[in-house]
Length: 284
Ligand SMILES: Cc1cc2nc3c(=O)[nH]c(=O)nc-3n(C[C@H](O)[C@H](O)[C@H](O)COP(=O)(O)OP(=O)(O)OC[C@H]3O[C@@H](n4cnc5c(N)ncnc54)[C@H](O)[C@@H]3O)c2cc1C
Figure (tube, rainbow, N blue to C red):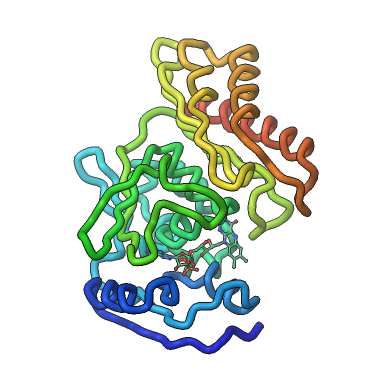
């Protein structure tokens, strides 16, 4: 319950954040919604001598939908995502997924940036961002660079982000077609036993493109290119569904924990993906 002592900083601009990060290296961490970092500090699983609160830094909030591109500022909360009718009209999968994350109090605080930067395979947004082929915007001492969500995750809590970089936004093309975020969990606020994000396009009764990513079934989110490809050109019948599930099972690598043994997780992953594809297809 009791975190170790730390120095608290509250800069008002990004230069201030970057200066503190540069000075203290991996002894410093940014604080967004605090609903992954503070629990880790309370358990003393994270020691953060220098904590940099982002809440007063301008330009990190907001949702824009312009010219077919959607941009979410890193400090945009889950509640703001759920509450945005503009975003829901443009990319309804965001609201569907966000409503399955945590609980109302956590969603008031937790941010999209924290969720994707955290690196916990249990987080739901990373897989969703891979499904949407999102781009992460990272600012550091050398300026801004852009990393595809599909290339960002390296291992549990290991990402392409350097210690002196801050994630400022995520952006992605406005998705087309049917969508679904399906999640199996033990109770509200639990991380997924298995979850699937699916976007699917139907033209002339056939699937012309499909994007599939899985959550909490490996030490990173898993974008399964093969699973999506198995649906393309089909009418998404049982055979196509079987092929997509088989491809997905070839890509995941779950481990046993208190959510169940490996075979159980593979079974749940199969069911969840079938449900997600069926629902996305019915909406396409
Ligand atoms: C009870 C409970 C249930 C939860 N259930 C779920 C769930 O079902 N699904 C789910 O996805 N999440 C869940 N969460 C996690 C929650 O969504 C967190 O809020 C989220 O993981 C992190 O977002 P944050 O803004 O709180 O980040 P913080 O906790 O502030 O930060 C998390 C990490 O990301 C880093 N970070 C944050 N912002 C940035 C940035 N802009 N640039 C660089 N690094 C940054 C921090 O330094 C830290 O290392 C749950 C949390 C709780 C407490």
